[in-house]
Image (cartoon, rainbow, N blue to C red):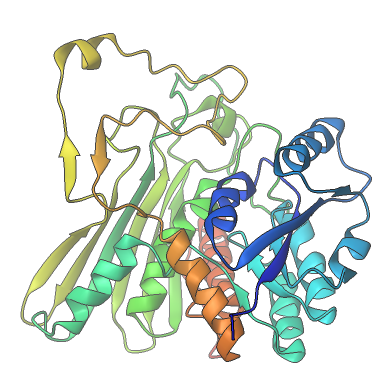
Length: 375
């Protein structure tokens, strides 16, 4: 008997999501088929046109009624690519309709929204995955190093995650740090302690127990877009878990040409017997050509100045075919649906990740350590 094929609807190609990067994964998987593209009717014309272009490219209908799209019996999985402020309500609707979920990074804009989404998924008994955090090369290699036992007991770790995107420029105006207060969407920027730091926190969740204390720092700007809005483009967190082990990370958007593969992704694991450095961009094939280095035009496109949809120039190539681990995550979701089991990194972990990051923002705002209550 052949394995079941699952239909998937792509809800929104918002520029604040990675939906367009998920499409090749869905197309290449032998047991998935894209059924439709959908979004709300009251979206900006540019996004509506972008959604339609993708629907035409995929040869599927474009629906402006998300509820009807989700209710379609041909749909088994909803790929959530809308703005973070819309995700919780979409996840709840999909879960109540009995649909499984592929969620891009965050289940909600606030902790309350993330908790509501997690409870809806758990109550409905559907499978919901947040790919990227636990499936990429950095997490996989860190787990391997820890499982080998040579490090002894893990005492702590530090993680660096940098995105080499955007064009750093002089900072002429600097606004005071502005707490997010549930608002993450801005026309020309994203909060990078959230969007980049999440990858580091996802790895820390894999290595440590529940996080109990969080101290955050932000406000060192590379980009005027962020500085004039008081929104972070770079930051750091220090965390301790319930056993007193320490984790730190620095992360954000550091500008093009800062790394030969578009940004550093490295973990330092400190053990009771030994320590280890894990670099998800290594091994790699590096080529250093003087003419390429001195003559390369690193200026981002005027249509995509922060390079949300276009990657940075890569002067070397990681030998891993899937550094981010998205294909690994997709296989885990399909297997979880088949076996009726939770995925490795699901919506409850995503809810906890949001709690840690929001605590970091409160710490930055008030200049003090934030203590999280026991779960």
